[in-house]
View 1 (cartoon, rainbow, N blue to C red):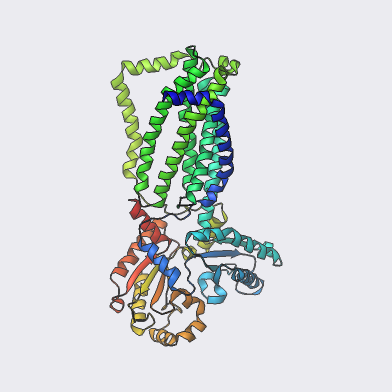
View 2: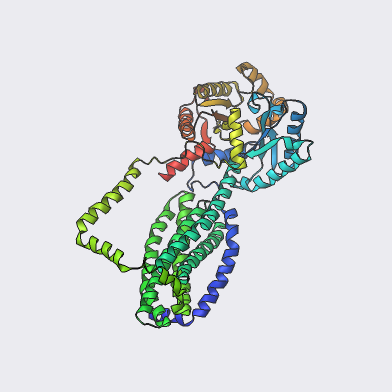
Length: 563
């Protein structure tokens, strides 16, 4: 350790140059990291929701597994005339895109759910061709660009408001807002932190060094996280964690090292001797502290949830970067600066009142004279701050979790005003009949109808979409006759059947659309209700395999794994 510390100080210029090069490339690579982070997260363990979503993507000819919702508001009625022509032009543009399977709208389905009461607001659903659930995020910006170009090319297109929303657009906007929030937090906190450090050290140079280490810690950590994200899923939540912990830990460790160095200088040591002693003492404390924090983060690596594993990996990286910088670059800089860290001298004289030992000595002596009182007072404060933790309810926000100022968030608000927000987060019940049976048989249709009636009876359910819900009031006999000739049925209802009936007619889908009065938490409770019905299905569906997927079901499984 002695040889290592002396070597770092002796080769201080080499250390500074190496870190300057590493910092340059890290700060250039760091802005690319947000685009590599995983939006969805989830569990590495197999879950019912993930299994159901996988069946939806693979079993149906044109599944609605991943989709965008395009909300349109304008001055004209959307069910005819110029408004209808505008919607048709957007749909045609969407269908021409190579990653779009098809579209569903009021014009193609006749379903009134796609139209507001005054008919001046509508939306259409765009089914996507994506290899994985998270890859839909890469299509959001190109699709929005295509919609903007189509709007601009339409006569008087500026009079219409077009908003692309849905699960993937919301995820992308959350990631964008998270990255922007991290950047804004750095810009707001760094000047305030510098002021506090100037007060603490009484010198501008001493106060700047911890800021440099903190910023470099964030940059190096983000660059390393970007490398890791190319090989394993890393949650977008790592962005905020890196900013908070990187700045805090980097500055904290730097304070310890700089303070110790100044103490050695005040004892008359040369700058190199002071740097060696600082690294041997304060440096060892920094390493010990870092290892302690690392142990805490390492425990998160053994959880099955991508979000918590990402926090563990990100925490390990950012703390390791802070420790390395505080025990290599910082001592090298101190050895170069020497007593210049106390510049400018006039600032120290102006802040002499703050550094007068009387105030802190009185406080310390008071604690020493009355340790029991200090313990009781401090313990009471800590207990009061900790007490609310016993009433924490683990879960997801009731509503309003999306960024309201973004396009996707405003699109959700538009759908809410229409009473159709539940369309973008349906509970998806997959029904797989035993080998040799068909979901279009009279027996299976009767079971699906009973299941649909049971689901629709729940006040939290706005609508149910299934093979037996094509037309309101349609009889079971009519459905049996319709599906007796599947080729003819597909010709008539091709888009619907491609999304709700597998090619071999053995697997079907029941979409449960929550009402707009159903919050996210009550929607998760509705998932339990749907799973309970699937566990005790109508006798006509005995032997069938059921799986419940969709965003709400994935949230339920996520919470179960988190607990």
